[in-house]
Length: 270
Ligand SMILES: [Zn+2]
Ligand SMILES: [Zn+2]
Ligand SMILES: [Zn+2]
Image (cartoon, rainbow, N blue to C red; front, side, top):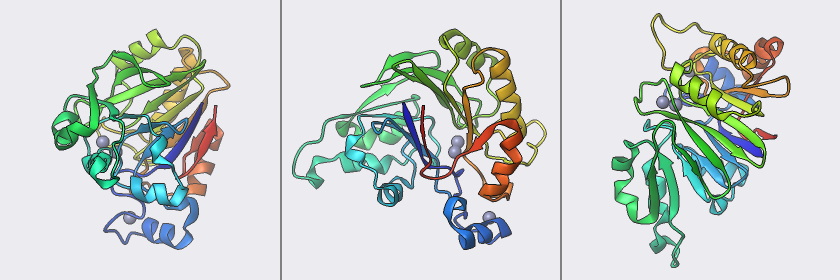
């Protein structure tokens, strides 16, 4: 199984849309892995995770062949994860020939947003605990802990390989952990974790995202419970500029904990 993170920023991007902070200025100056577009990922070139607002720019920058996408999984109805307008461009009128109806899976509240494009897609509403098959992947739906109350996370499996895609979420709730324990039959190959806060502590009582401390805690928990083992790759993504650290600084911070820092375009073969 192959995963490519096509974007790795939180909602505001990095450099953030209207920002002149030092972290954004440094990122703009240094470029490379410090430039982060909004989070998205593609599995095995055919399964798209979220319709992030930067998808078109990512297609151009990384030479993505979006015609290969056979299924779309939506995590939640926040603007940095669901730009419904992309589904307008499934309209055959733009191409003079019909495109296959694109299967789109996600929580019920994405239906309203995608309604104008319903004739171009096949919408499947999923609930926590639902297990289903896309064209090539076996998916288990997990509940996220996030300000979008219907947020979902996914366990994605294919041919003996598996990954957990945990975006956007705070530290997973009991229900999510129980579902993971129930459905993970052997240690997963990869965990991609929400890391919006980076090195910053979460505000008191805040549970909607994670940072380094929660990622380290979650890795320990997954290892203890057998969800992961020494071969599992742990990757942090969905970074806010408020975390301030450059890519290399984040890598150094997390290296002792065996957690990798995603960057736009990063590919892992599992
Ligand atoms: Zn987000
Ligand atoms: Zn900034
Ligand atoms: Zn969100």
